[in-house]
Amino acid sequence: MKNKSLIYLLFMILLVPVLAGFIFSNYPGTSAKKVIIHLTTNIKKDDGPPCVAFDMALTNLKLGNKVEFLFDGEAAWNLKKSKDGKNDFDRYTIPEDLKKLLFEEFKDRSLMKLKTFGGFLEYLHNKGVKITVNGTWNVLTSVEKKIKDRTHIPSYVEPLTLKEMAEYINDSQINYKY
Image (cartoon, rainbow, N blue to C red; front, top):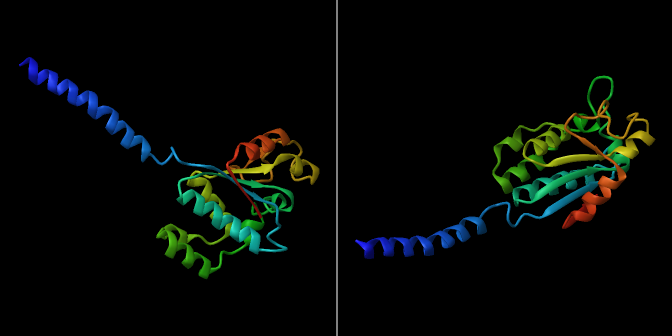
């Protein structure tokens, strides 16, 4: 009886580290990189860079990376809601051919339901992408009265101080700028 218990104990001592190593080596969060998508281009002036920025945010999310979307400069202005509660991204329709290409690559049917880049941004947020904006820019351009205000931007967008922006960018492993 002692031999069976000893064999069982040895088996567990050897098996637990092997299983733990297997589980944690395949855990999606262990190899995830922190990726910043730094968007500065106004979608009303040039829609190419913002389209690519949204696509790269989605791609990095699908790769299992921790993604943060940072709106800065003129792109921050695009988040400002008008009196009707919509911003420039809410008014900018996603081209059907782009949605088809994204669906072909990622096989995610929910992408086909997206209508606007505002909807795309909210989709990214709901999938775990952190959406931030340069809060100082918002005050300087009179979008908001205080750096942390969210009166005229979507509620899921987090305004950052300059220090917070620098920390987020400096702590990232990958930084795309559009």
